[in-house]
Length: 529
Image 1 (cartoon, rainbow, N blue to C red):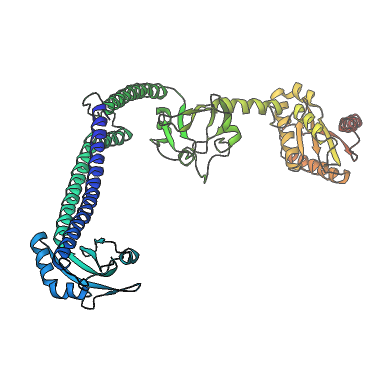
Image 2 (cartoon, rainbow, N blue to C red; image 1 turned 45 degrees about the vertical axis):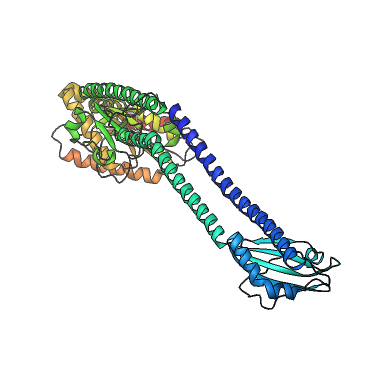
């Protein structure tokens, strides 16, 4: 609001207030003046009537003065004509008789005339009383009549109709009130128009401007007219939108460049809304695998057969989420979509619209995982037979020792004459014999038993929850399977020396049981030789 406008509103309001006060004051003063003029007229009238009574009835008499009936009855018409001709109003004349302390009003007085509240004591004391009754617009004049002893014997009640005077006064009041209402209406309309032009219209422009800005119309402008405060605000808002537009354009270009770079990365890159799991972005590498899935729920399109987020997803784990901003979280998992292994690096960032977003970069590590699995397998298995090796057996003995799977039976077997077979038939025949031995023993043992090749010609079977009788049963099944194999073999038959030991007590070391079984095996081998 400009200074000029503020001054104009203040001056207009002050003038209007002064005019209202002046009008109210004028009406009040006119009323007071009317009442005062009426009282003064009554006084003049009173003096004129008293003088006329004295001149007409009390001059040149030697006896008693005439009574009130004589004055009123014989000359009432004269007084009325006198009053009307000299003072120009409608008058009525009535008598009032004094009877002791009581005033007796004329019985001929019509009820149409109201009776004013007057001080009767003043009448009894002989005072002239004048009263003006605004209601009905009547003036009442009470003139005392006295005898020779100056005693009041009665009163003349003169009633004058002042309706014409009051009607004029009311007409003036109505005119002034109408003029006041018109002035108020015009002034209020003018002020509203000024407010509309100076405040409401600019505010509507600003409201529409902000609505367009909220709809991302950053090329909109506010009109700038003049140099008042509203115009200054428009300049500031226009400048602010320019800055926002420039920053937005720069951010958009930066975002597009970033997306172009991410499209060239030979890894899966995607961004997910942390509240809705909506895929906000997926790069070309991912689109080549999953298609254009942006806008869809990540776990519905990046995985298969799921009814909720992935079990390894940390977005629902608030404690982990709070610690992920500006940090990388690394996890590996196998995709149910294509059965390949991925290593993900995830971090929390703020998206363009201010949302909390998880940015994930996934590298395909399937070949590495397969090599790791292969190395892990080789580290725990015999490469020739596929059975477990000594490293695995040692770890299992440590796991079982002191546990709840006692009794534990350990069986040690050693091929007989393997060196002779290698020398006679060649190492390939000896290797095949080792493979066949492993297959024979694998068929005979149970699924819960652990079978390993721990040396060139030595095998070990660890059997948890197995007493000696059950272990003997496994041994006899091995001999049975071995017999079947030898019957169909065209090369030298397989011969194995076995040693069996059982550990019934957790307090006993399983290594000692292993040594004991090994001892029984060598004793059987020596007996055979």
